[in-house]
Amino acid sequence: MNRILLASVAVAVLGLSSIITVVALAATAEPRSATTHLPIASSASATPSAAPATPSTAPAAPSVAPAPVAAASPKKVLMIGDSIMKGYGLTPGAAWPELISATNGWDLTSLACDGAGFLAPGSPDECGNTFVDVSRTAASHTPDLIIIEGSSNDFGQPNPQLLSATVTALTILRSEFPNAEIIGLSTVWSDTEPPAQLADINSQVEQAVIAVGGRYLDIGQPFGAHPELLQGDDVHPTVAGQVALAAAIQTAITAK
Image 1 (cartoon, rainbow, N blue to C red):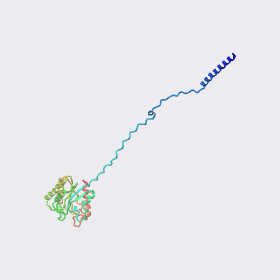
Image 2 (tube, rainbow, N blue to C red):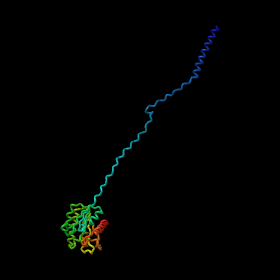
Image 3 (spheres, one colour):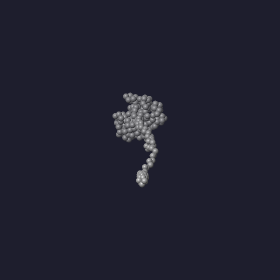
Image 4 (cartoon, helix red, strand yellow):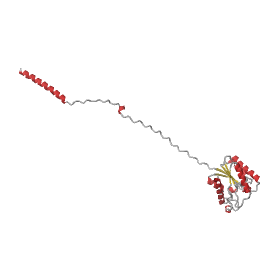
């Protein structure tokens, strides 16, 4: 019986030891940490959104170079006069019309004729025409400016007829060229005292020019007391005389 009791006690002790061992293992085991499950963001929200696109700047309009400004056409100038205007005895280009045209950049057409006046016909081997005839034949030109002068070739002509011829020539020119500027010049004389009729001729040119809306310019007598400016005939200017005459006319034109 004692053996049975000892056996029971042994079994009980072994069972208790097992229980203690299990409890000890449970107490010493490292506790499992709880896992927190975070929601997984979608790929769209997980990727940072791109900054809004900057509006593209519109391409600059191609620069257009300004159209080149056409150079102004030279003023077309028509001149009617006598041998002094033509440059009698001198080489071409030495007369005052060519000189002031070069100064001003004019496109010159000279209808000057040796021996001509408002009533006096020009030399037969030249034009053979009066200023009135020349005015009638000028219609083929397109001048912006017309310059016509009084002439000593008309000395001795009756003043009434001379005035009528002067008015006729200017009236023809205005009718043919309604938009042209017209300038009438006083009569050039030599280095001596001018004849009395010179003042009458100048007055007639002034009257006729103003009547058609033009300008009259009294250029004085550039050769007065300067015989060295005249050729041997004491009528026609030398090269230096033409330069002096051109200077006087240029001054009168620009003075306005």
